[in-house]
Image (cartoon, rainbow, N blue to C red):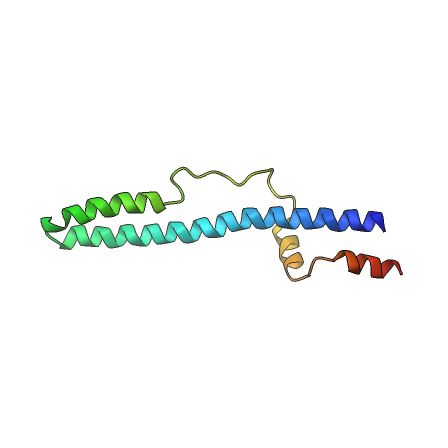
Length: 107
């Protein structure tokens, strides 16, 4: 039973590590898309509006720059996850075993 518990704990840690890396990618992508859309919008303002919008454009550039996740990007901690993408997807649809599940299979 100890071996199963250790295996379940290791798998749980591997899943969580993979999920942290995946979250960094998906959250970063969403933030980057938002910043990119804002930059496109701001470019349209610059192209179409007059000089009276210069202060707004300058302020907006600074605001957008601080939203951009690429600026100062730091990779997630730890080594590259050792789960393959296919394995992670399979596990995503399989609940992690609990200690009770492991205990029950020993009975």
